Length: 309
Image (cartoon, rainbow, N blue to C red; front, side):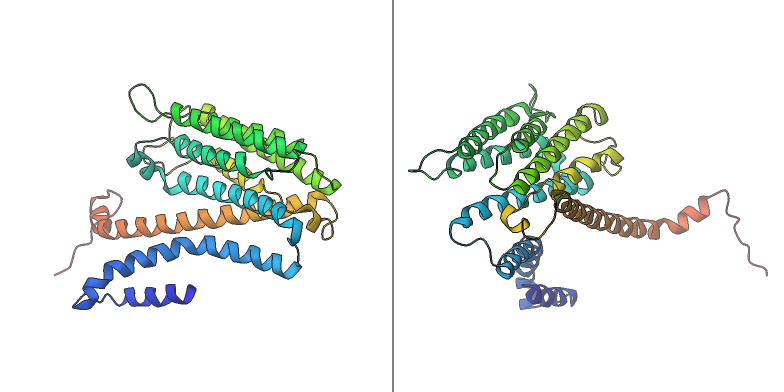
């Protein structure tokens, strides 16, 4: 996939637009964009499968547990990344869509709740406490998701902020902090995971209610976020948990596991912020290039040079 992406990139850099090249260029541009957007997801899945294969776990009866934990952890990492992207470069897209951010959050929560409601229990077998907790949490998610979608518009049909997704994350964290496990380290990891999720929900509530005061952004174009707005995506990315049976033989404490997750969250947050800063700097330099002469001539602090005859 990377080789195909590089080859397509070189071809597009040639700017061939005559003959057959002009007819296929649009298709190649779309293909280049699709592959570029899919590469982070495919790379993440490849790293997970590589680690699972190298360590030799997730076999036999452990397959369901591995799927549940890795899918849930990957979902929260992806959610935190999307929150960061929307914070930095997604405000214009949200404005064009005519919907608030909570509408899309609630839509994903409702869909995820429907999946959890019918997949967390092996139908035909006896119900366990964990099955009941996962299934009832799925019901809470899709009910709350539908409510969040309903509250994402006011009576005039305009987008409106609400706290439903943040409350759902907070309640999920509370449930996970009391989620019983067979291994002691798994119980401790779920406790930290739950506390981190509760912190993510609480910081999201503070952001919407006190920092933004129910507005979409602080500035008109959304290019100057408040420093506190980086906290909810970061805490959400740090709220991941892994297979306890694997960690039981490779780490000494649950704090080491959380340190690994926090380091990953720091790295992802920094990479996304750097990409946004680079694109903004490039746009600013392009704009300043065309206005440089005008600015220098109109500035009262710059003395015009006169040529001597």
